[in-house]
Length: 410
Image 1 (tube, helix red, strand yellow):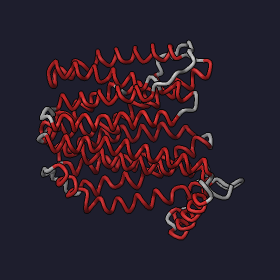
Image 2: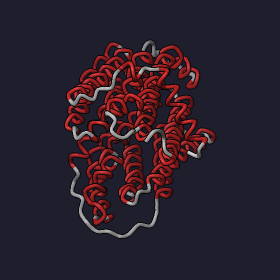
Image 3: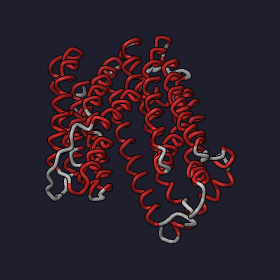
């Protein structure tokens, strides 16, 4: 294969577009909430949202993919419905009392309701995956985030936005996402078990994404947590888009008999160079942008520049994981995720010195995870050459291939 195929480019356009739209709508919802509420109240909402994310650990798509893979085409929809129900009950029993202690019985009830709505949405994922209907999953995710944005705007216009109603908007979005994902599927029976390995992996990712927010809230207060949450979520969202671009473009540059290292180098060029440019821009512009957008003094200092490490590391990590799986070396993935999660949790307590130290902790944790994956590729002799990845001449050639494919109808 000498260039991108029509299928690859269509997949790129759909997946990248849906990811950007969904992440963008979710982040705009957060910006509007932060602008309408004072930072202390927004920080309270952020902690409730972190608890909701914890409740969603068992049925996030990565876990549902595990259910689908175990069941195969002879498995059962009823089986994963029962499993999801079990996990929802377990999450409600553990997390509802925490929400009650933190913000009263109303927040506990809303947390349980919003987690039930998210479980209902992700319940459709395994069946759609088994039938190859990834586009419907993307549509449901976009619908959930756009509905959440619309509900947030309605609450602001009516003067009813509070931390609790903002959480309600998230639940309403999940119900809309479930309706968008609904599709007739063949009835199947079968048990999924408790999916402990998948749940454990998702739990580690929750630590990576959310423990820094909780630690900042604990040691610096809710106001600081609100500002840091906005910064971290924006950087994480952009990093996910960059990694997604690299992974989706990977098949576009496959050429028969070529070493994996060169395929990786080509696939890394666009997201890596883009990540570097965005990281530099973020260091100078992101802090003022967030302060203007929220009409709050967030006092982020050098934190945006330090979190720029995530933007540079994300494409490498995403593509390296895909490469290690294809090269039958997935044994490197768990140590990398463990290193990121444990280091993030431990180093987040540097936040006692301020949000800049918290940002440094998150950035260094990602570097450690990336180094472990780098060691895995190096042990296989497939580490991409740095000069090939950072080649602007190579990037021009890659973009030329993409333009040519588009002109041909791709």
